[in-house]
Image (cartoon, rainbow over all chains, first blue to last red):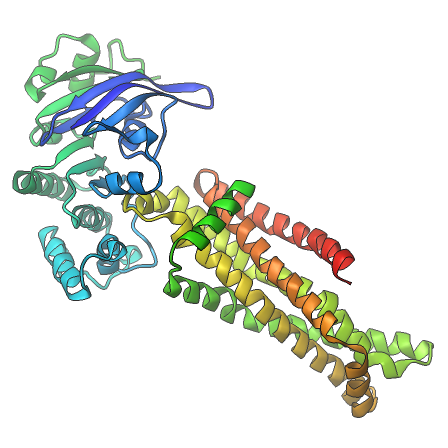
Length: 248
Length: 235
């Protein structure tokens, strides 16, 4: 479904990706882990076509998103849902309008149909009764859930999550991951989750990949990664201070 | 910057305008700038009336106060000062709003929802700028002429008939149209620069504040430069 091939990207001369390659089969969720600032979000944005690589390709069902423009790119993106780290809600719109926005822009549904769909999704993410609130009036957890509802409202085939639980308390974080799992179980989207919450994320994904120094160092099931003999992977998943990863 | 404008104009002519967005921007750029426009228009007209009266009296031509106030406003001060006021009030807000949308990934979110950010964010502001500026300039001119009347006629005792009859004799349609052409291009220029700076803002609060300052300074300088060019071609 998603094939990332030999991705290279540098910002101001600093190489962030140095030939990252990864394949995500249809219907699977892959967790992407790695040190902060090592390009996990950059890789995710390449999949969405928000950043173009210096070299390499990102194929979605055989179509290279890096070479798509205009209508073709919009069509492919309409199959994608993206949960941004900050939520990226429109501050001038209410929770309801934020979630309804992608449906209204597509213009395929009538307003009553949009209303029904939005209320159903808001109910799913536990935001019933908060429809008329603005992003500034709700908590971080509610912002993340609203953003999740907005990403899910079009029933996307591919979901990309950029740190969905960062900054949330453990209960809300847990609830969001459970929600992602239940929606995956129901709709079976293909997805990628960037997260540092390894233990909790490992419960809901089929595979785990580690991005280190611009390349995918390892890919495997959560169990394989947890028991990896690679000293870098071992140090990272165990959270040990001493080891080959230099954090200073 | 040229490519940004070209993209926006291509989008404006190739896709359907979002009328609700355009009206919202006309309300923001136009209606909400009325107070500052009326205020600056009134004081500009009043100071023109005061200075003009004393200067013209020295040459025994105080009867020409009306045309002097009207021509100064219609040809130069109205379009330029209205544009500078709109830059300060609405242009800076435009840059800050788009800048914050960029830094908080809202523009990326638009792209991922299949919405062209040029069509949704930039085109309505360009269209609103082009519509609102000439209207604000017209208001500025009318209020300014009335301000000159208050000083010249009511305060300094000049004849009301003289003030207005000389004005109609000296001001013709070319002057009015020239001023309107100027304000129309100023509207485009303000929206273009302020949207560009917001869209390409740097990181964080510092990036947005720098972009806002740059937008206001660049717009103001270009308004004066473009005003000179247009004056030399139009009149």
